[in-house]
Image (tube, rainbow, N blue to C red; front, side):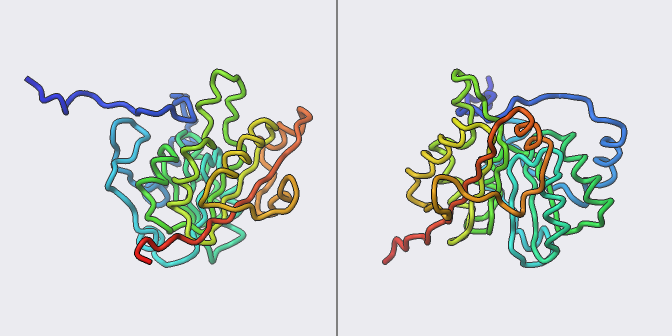
Length: 248
């Protein structure tokens, strides 16, 4: 008789995405087959295909072959923003976190064409990456641009930027690190601001109601789509406060 711990386990919290099995193009299939060994980080899984096994983590200096400031983009999509950023800042390292393999394949293809070597990708659920895969205080900047707004009220619980998120971001960010957010949905922008206002690990790094547009964010299809529909783009940026020494 199987032990009860052998029973299938599932996530106990809603995720901020719906896993789709869309077919990759031939070019994306080739990119994954030929380039994953260079760009994709091998992840030990837990209960789900995009999960991260607790207790497993990477050493960024070993992954990139050097010690350098690390920027992580959550929900990198097709990779336009992070590929551009990695090309513009070869002295920094970049990690793209995405659950859709087709987007990661496109990211690898564009990065390889541009000769970019300071970029790695991980196919995994972002909160689990922040909680398990990345060492504590290993990230200099965390970017979340145009996350799924889940604009129907009944689906708001799936939004990534919610009360459980700041402690995960704070764990991964170094003291003084930056959390950068952008969205074209006003109610989500206000939710983000409210959630971060209650987060004891962060303080705003902007004056006024909203932050200035982040110069390091290239214009992507998501931003163009929002502008075309008449939605205002809102940026937010927060600084991770110094950790409190519990032994003091």
